[in-house]
Length: 64
Image (cartoon, rainbow, N blue to C red; front, top):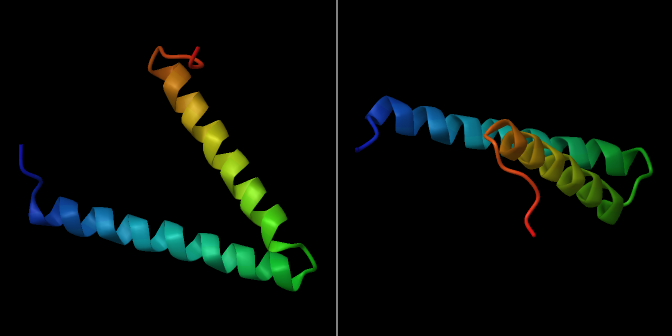
């Protein structure tokens, strides 16, 4: 199944919006006094929590 042109454009738009907001948020947090390591760690923990919730919703769980 080949994605349509509109689906590809929407996928790239979502990627740009999410990626851009992450870097903007990290820049604002660093301007507020937080370190890059801390903000990256929080971002990865948040992403991991989302992926775990998605996996559990689909009937999966933690890897052995």
